Image (cartoon, rainbow, N blue to C red; front, side, top):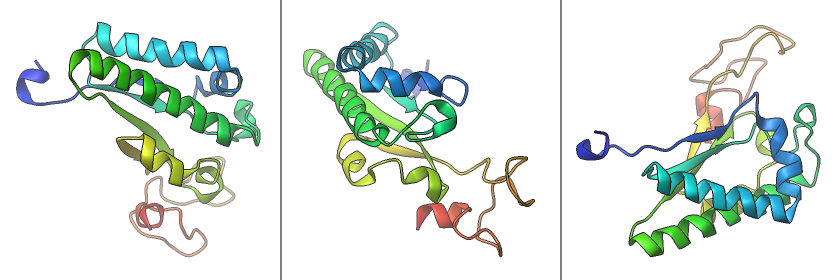
Length: 160
C-alpha cells in the first residue's frame, strides 16, 4: 500500500535499548560484513526502500562505546552502503541508507559527518530528548531555539 502511494518504508535498526550491540559488532570485520549483508537481505525480503541505522551513540561509554567507534561507524555504514548498492544493481533500483543523528555536541562529535555525507541518503536528526532527568537543569524536551544555559541543545542549534 505504501509503494502504491509513493511512500518509502525503511526499517530502523538499533535504538536506545539495542545500541550496546553496535560497538563490538562494528569493531569485528566479519560481524560487520555479516550485519551489512543481513541489512540488504532484510530490505530485499520485505521490499523495503532502504534501511535506517539508529546507533545511540558512537563513542558513548554507557553503551560500551569507545574512541574506535568513530572509524568503526564509518566502516559499518560504508559496508551497508556497499551491500545496498550491490542489491540495487541486481534489481535496477536505488536503496536508501539513513541514520539517526544526535543533536547534542557531545554526542555528534563521535560521528564523522564529512564521511557520512558521502555514504548516507539522509540524516534523521533526533531533535528530542534534549533535556530530561539526566540533565543538570530542567529544560524543554525538544526546544525549537537555544535558550540561556543550553546553547546548541535545540532544533536550531542542531541544524547550524
